[in-house]
Image (cartoon, rainbow over all chains, first blue to last red):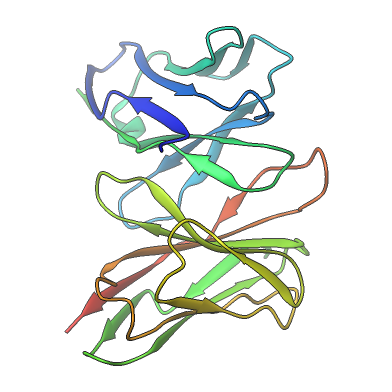
Length: 111
Length: 114
């Protein structure tokens, strides 16, 4: 059973637009929710992360929105740029133990 | 220069052959992980280790083996029992301390079957 469900599978956004990727989880014991960015042939790199005691976290153009009651969290990329074109993964973990990853979203930002 | 290194970048396996993927970290992290990445399936956990000389199976451990003799090293062996080994393999580490849960990834090894 997929512990973390991610959508959409792929996303195409115009330069300057907002990219939104959504994730949902089942286990209410999860206490850490990171987002990773991966370029082709490279390992994922941590982009931004949130804990369930806050509803939003912003770092530059990247924002995580977290809805604890709905068990959902999303990544918003403001003013999307062609350099943001990559695959994005959401994840969840409990107390730093096993991490569960979404299936990834391939983002393409067109000029 | 701190980080996680994986070698080789590309690895070719012949039928019936065991191959070993290297993962080294100099971040002084306690926990290390191996993931397999296939197109459209995200990252699936093969094995993980929270401390030296101890490791646990992940979701897809069959056909794989690991060792953790040193804190900085966590090699993965893909055995001949793994019938579909072609994939991108990622090693990761984390501090392993309560409340510090960020996971860092290496650059990956792509395994291809001849």
